[in-house]
Length: 161
Image (cartoon, rainbow, N blue to C red):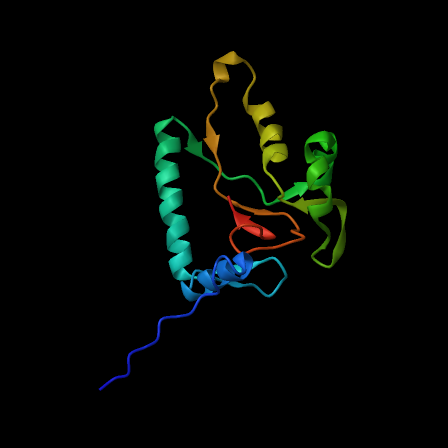
């Protein structure tokens, strides 16, 4: 006769909410902390939840007339400088690449903290008059903000968007 497996014990929510949350993520096998502080490995069940949310949202976005597109992960630093006011809040959390292929880059590039700067650059090329409107574009991508106080699924250095 097989012994009955004990139900996993969670830290009581009222006792230590952050520990309870992490216990819940671990016991449900949704994600693990990644090797770099603030990153996570989304396990299959956790990723299937993301896919379900994405499918639902994608259907609604497409019903509204938008189409999906993809913009680069690497953004020239000059794009961010032009929109300094918009990016000011991201400054401490930027991940900047200065070398690639063993050489120093002519211009540093930022790993996408937000997509507005790169999208604005291309929208300004694509929209020449009111006849080009509306331009309804959606992007599913990952975003990188160097998070100071990470929490799996809530505040991570890299997250799906």
